[in-house]
Length: 485
Image 1 (cartoon, rainbow, N blue to C red):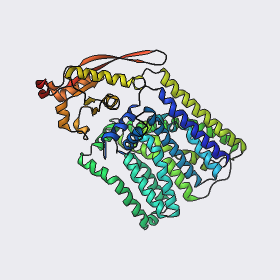
Image 2 (cartoon, rainbow, N blue to C red):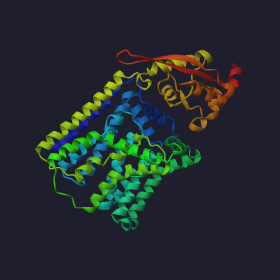
Image 3 (cartoon, rainbow, N blue to C red):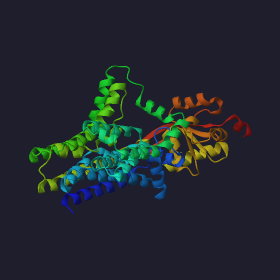
Image 4 (tube, one colour):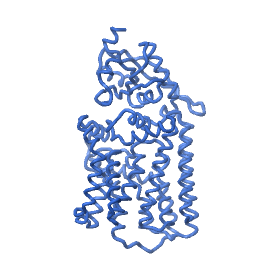
């Protein structure tokens, strides 16, 4: 085994171990991670935010490892490791083993592959799925084997079943085909149509589910993006802000490569036109297409939506600005990337130790038991529904003593996997962060919602620094239920 491959393996293992165990310093799972597990438990072919695939993976893995929080941190890092593996396989299509390993190592200079990957969600899963899809496309495009085309179709379907914005990757591949003048080659190839059928077969049940639920997922996507900026500057500032964030998140990789390139530049250039186009387009087009949506709409973009878009940056740097790979480079680059990973790990650990944020320091089991007790004192029955925003409702669903169903935002339409009549008959515990939120629930359900009560919750970090927060709670008790009582 080449020395660089051993170094890549050791670096990957080191990162996996660090970021699987350091997050255990948290007292609670991240909100998106809790939500993914709940989706996997209750949702069949869709959620009101995203397609269902991430939920299936999260819930099955969570149950398989004994319903322990640590299972989700391990799952996140497995996604990152899978992404690194397929990035290496892609790099091997263009480089020898040494250069491919070194190009892949550069990805550890991007925070998406460790620090930000702690919180399992659709974006973290995309770290694995995007390079997987790109790899099978390149193999199919260059070798035209049926197996590769079918695997490409399968990964297209799974990507769409994970997150809709994977269409940006497919759009980039379409741009490549046109740029490479391969349109006729694709159109005349029956294997391409078989790949399309495979992709459609995978995504079809979800499309039918969307139709049955009035396309609620797309409504969420539109609201999350905003309704467009009313000012002309939004069409310029928001995309520039998004692009700048991606460069910032990859700053460790870029800085490291610039330092190495100054003293070890290789003047030899690669001449394969198709390779150049594929690498350049898959490295640049996804980020640019994202930014273009903001240019057109004036909508602000969440920086973290760029998670999977940078998967070819290490390969692109190595390809277009080649290094003279010598013994010194093979020793220095793994060491430097190891230092970066360590610094990011220290940063995350310090965040866990120092913060008093409820998202890190909530004793979830104690809080859930406290809320269940308040419901039982009022109704004399076990709690079956928790109504609130995502954080509290999913927390009770995961850590409650019995099976508690989360009714997010107290809207049955936004939780179509639950029976609205059952919710009405059994009532719910309501939790709110402030009076405005609680009053919204009262507006929706009127007198069936009791007046809000206040509860003080304490959040303490590892150095005994304390934050006190008031949480409002109340009860949804339909009139029939009140009368029966």
